[in-house]
Image 1 (cartoon, one colour):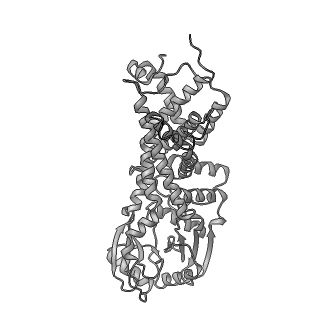
Image 2: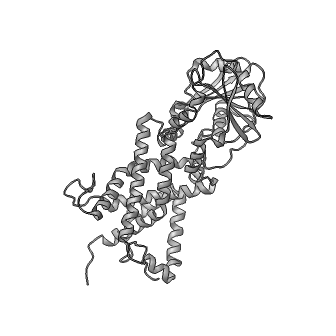
Image 3: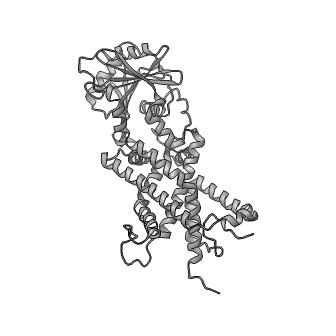
Length: 454
């Protein structure tokens, strides 16, 4: 009877979990990498789409209120939702108007007041990509599915690092670079291992910084902050596809600005009042010298007061600012910069900016694209390795030699991950129960998966 080397049972069990995690994650990893790469280049793509409306003849502009009136005339029954300041000479003004819960972005030539284009806010190309990436165009069910795949991708990466971590290596070949001339089998093994080594930290960073958007984890995060007293007003990132709650009757000015901004990202239409004549022009004149990071969105009062909200929607979130301004006088009533927010909000803001490729410019975009390419390479090479070595008629996961001895470290890691990622913890328990009480009792499934009978 052969004696298995020490640690074989543990290694074998980790291999199986790595395989099962990959089986679930690979299609989602490829999808999220592709859609995420497109979204990473959002500024360039939107600049190309809007180029015809940002190369207008430079001429004296009409009043802002005249621009808004032209936009409202183009959409019968609409009311002003937000006005976006032109970012430079020759740029069209963007006026966002609402009819009920439907928002329409109207491009207006500031000089001639001609309406150049109309498009629904949720029908813009990058909004489609955003929903494809975060919720598979399926609302909250899609958000749950993406989050589940992301949680198991963490398991896939951690187990992969354990499996492929160099043991007794004599060189850097197969560790930091692939050996390309030692046969097809070793080629794909090295491509998979080297891609995994290089992308592991980037992938873990992308996954963790994307979790605040997810419906389950984002809601869990909010609850924890409420219980621990670390909540600091409405956040400015969407959580799943849920609607924004109706704001209270009395909301601090700084929080009103953040709430309006959050609603804008969720595609919701706040109940803005019809502004008084002269107020919008006065507000715009007041903010022009403040050098707020573009794009700058100006929203009329939403609660019957005179306070307008002005919000920077900069992709690089640490540059964002929220202000409230009295429409009668142009006085700045409140201003809240990024560095005045709770440290948890700042940490999430930095993470989201890095996730979207906006934190440190083109280098951030290139790094995000590289991570996506490596993730696709990892997924494709892993699939090829599995397809080549799988036994005929079996799924190809290694057959467990015996039950692995779960040490205190493993149990601690599983408990911590289950607490930090509740959806992962619940799904892990479900998988264990299904395997133990269902799959092991069905002979065809047991043979295909390589499981022992109960």
